[in-house]
Image (tube, rainbow, N blue to C red; front, top):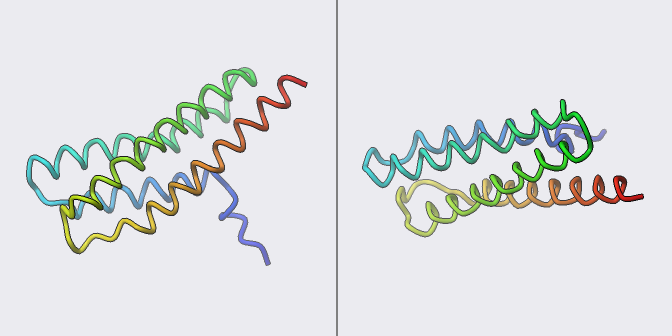
Length: 122
């Protein structure tokens, strides 16, 4: 039996946002930890928020625009996760599964945007 949640970008981005929020709670309570956490929560939860907004887009162009914002936020989130990983801000944190998931989300968003642009131009 297929796990449809795996393929539902709305659900995946929501669960990803939750995981990002949980990760930030594990960052040290230092100026660096607070700033990285703030940036990560903002970008990591914005992915799903913009995907949700896209569901009520007034046109295909509006839909593409909202998903393009999600894609930008996903790439920013990947950046912050890489910073956390490389600085070893918390040696107990493992960001590998989040980095894998954000790569998948990016690929899905790129595919949706490309397919929608193709349909729009045909």
